Structures are given as C-alpha cells and as structure tokens.
Length: 214
Image (cartoon, rainbow, N blue to C red; front, side, top):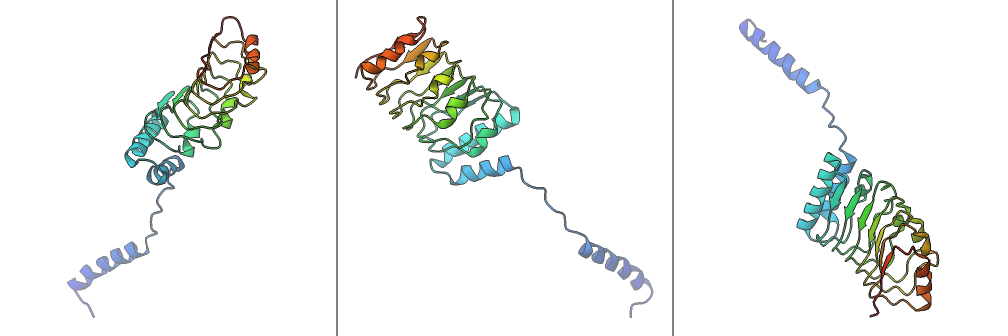
C-alpha cells in the first residue's frame, strides 16, 4: 500500500491516465464529397496518371476560385469525373484533343455555358446534355465520328458558331433554319447528300456556310 509522498504522486497520475482512457475519441469531419470523388477519379479512371493529376488540379482550382473558364484540352483523357457537373459557374469549357467517347450523365446544370469545345475527340453521337445548354453561342464538334445530329440541335437558338467539320454526317436536321442567330456553320468534309443541303437555305443570309466535298 502506497503511503506518504508516493501517494501524492501516484494518485494524480492515475487520475490523468483514467481520464485519458475514458475520453471520448474525436470523430474526424466528413470528407468533402467533391474532393473525395475527384481523388477517386484521379486514381482509378483510365488514361495517363500524370494527365489525370493535371486535370484534377485544374478542376480543383476552378472549384476553389469559382473560375468561369476551364481548359482540359490536350490531356489524353478518356473520361471525366462526375463532379465536373457541379461547376455550374462555367461559361467556357474546353475539352478538345482528348479521347472522350461519352460525358458524365448529368451536365445539364451548365446553364451558364456559352462556349463548348468538344472537337478532336471520339464522339459518335452528340452528348445528350448539349441540347439543354440554351445559352451556348459557340459549339465545336469538329473532328469526331458523328454520323447524325439530334433533332434537338435547332433548339440552341443562341448559337452563333457551329463547327461540325470532319465528321461522317449524312444529313442535318430539317429545321436547322431555326438557328436564326447563326453566323458561321462549318460542314466541311462530311458525307452530306445534295437533298439534305436544301435545309441550309433557311438559315439567315448573314450566316457563312462552309462546305467542301471529301
């Protein structure tokens, strides 16, 4: 049994030990869903690791600074993280010169987007969300593998520049003339039939139409 000075030393030490043992463990805060999802994409999605890291860095900076432009061109990306859809402040998105065949499912929240560059990729269809971007003024889909245009394209009534060159298009929507603000339409190097070109006559006279047979 401890007596005297030893008791005075031991009891405070024991109290401190018991308090530390019984102390409720701290619970780490929930991780930021944006950051955790972006980190998972950076680590696992196909493509070159260093390019995904660079893309994740640019996306992260865009989210933190609320920048209105995001350039992910020439990164050899074969996919994009779904969290990119949360960057609703974007006005310009450049995804040119990658290996994209599809886009994340829900990008329709890009309501502020005015310029979208999807050229030099591997799309065989126009991504579905594009027709919902009512504020688009510039849309570049050149140098893909497009075989048709969705009938909803003419709903993009704010379009001023539409580049569809170097694809495999055989026709254009019959009501493409609804694009009454269009100033330049590039259809070079497609497979358009003579009959399909009649629809272009309904475009405004101020629109420059670039055609060239293969």
